[in-house]
Image (cartoon, rainbow, N blue to C red; front, side):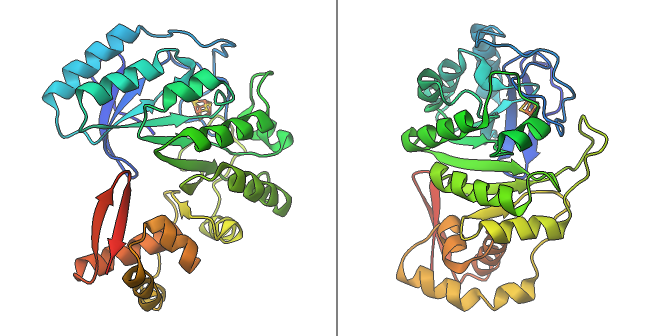
Length: 314
Ligand code: SF4
């Protein structure tokens, strides 16, 4: 997520985000500190590959800025940890997330992460304080991982998948697993079969497919077409899949209306989330969400929030 510059040193934005509403960004590491050097990175090439976690920016100073901003801006929906590097490198991440929860309980916290530290039990413990985790997983074979994410030497793909699997078993909030599609590298049948196996182990709430929408660090990288993204989504179904690439067109309303009666018959029997409906109906989250919007606007269905989920009922 890209945030606008602000008067603060560690805070960015807020911006209106497609996924999170009004989102205030927190930068937990100096530019550009990361364990990966992804070919699509919006921040540019990694300049600092640390091998150890640490207090890359002062925890107390970040808390002070958050306190100052959130005390006078009640409209913020999410504080999102991300920015110009990998936020879980910061050893104070749990303390800062808990600080927000304790002092501004109306604000939710989200973590954008490259997933390279979840094999460490103390990191998993620290991130339990978040409401939503958006981890990336762009490759499930080491070959594709090296091509797309260019990791520092000690990071391997299976370690990331195992870490995500353990995190998912512990974490009570939602996990939205983001996969950046690089045509010809991670969308082959062989890679997608491995992806499906890995995702079934991780059990995220939803899988989000993304693609290039602005220049990355690599000149040969081209965006996946809408058709390529839809083919990946079809392959991964019945997992709850959403295509979040900006170049993806909205669903065809006529095609959706044909599914309206099936959707209604499900939610008449039991209240369901958008993810439940995506799996039951074999539709992408984009299609289910659009249909739910139309049915809500016509007053045919209602929704209610329970815990971290929104349930729809007829
Ligand atoms: S993990 Fe994120 S910050 Fe690090 S290189 Fe990849 S896209 Fe950039």
